[in-house]
Image (cartoon, rainbow, N blue to C red; front, side):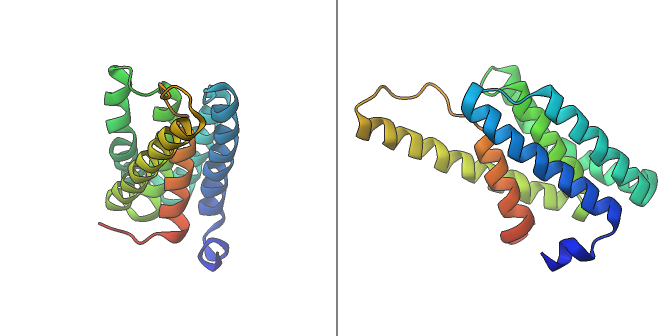
Length: 161
């Protein structure tokens, strides 16, 4: 937490936009199975503007690589209908912030933790359905896994790459 408080204002703004987007998206994904454009687009805009304000085009380029690393695999999964477009956009926000914080390798760490969180979430949903005697779920609100993995990568987990 001390690192957050010591960060430049622009970095704190970008990180706050990401955390707010994650929090709202968890709620809407659990309730409606949707991640709203009204949440992701402003978070992208605020984060990207903060990155440019902080480090200009060079830092924005690092951020763009972060977006490719974080959102690219999700975009491919979305093409096949395996995941929603809101998940892709939420991962893009995570990529903007993580790419600016420590470059594309850190974005790869965030992606790793999100995938791990998604696998754990899916397993828990399957077990819960079996225990309750219900049908196997057809999908899970992946915004929960995106939030858990991103927050773990940002604040608690080790950088893997």
